[in-house]
Length: 101
Image (cartoon, rainbow, N blue to C red):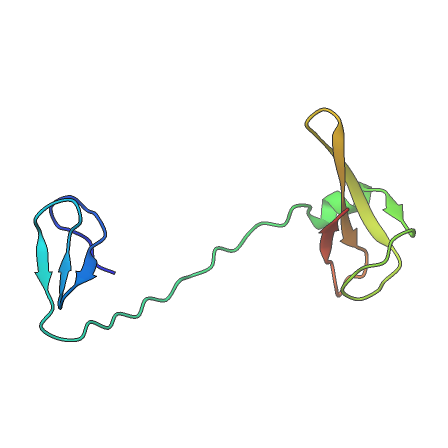
């Protein structure tokens, strides 16, 4: 993917060249362009920490979809004044799968 040096628009391939759809800039292609960029995934912080889970209520009425463990921590969240969702966290230390209802 190349960008126009004049207006920063993505160049489009047309007949052996890369042309800007907005201005008159043309990038001639004299050889095959191969660029490999590695995308680094951002490490996300957990929704609830281990300390948070110590104070959260537990239920045995749900089953973890990943490990089938029968206990889970839960937290109810209100959305749009009326709608509510329940976030579950598997209580199995080796799993800790998050899911919602």
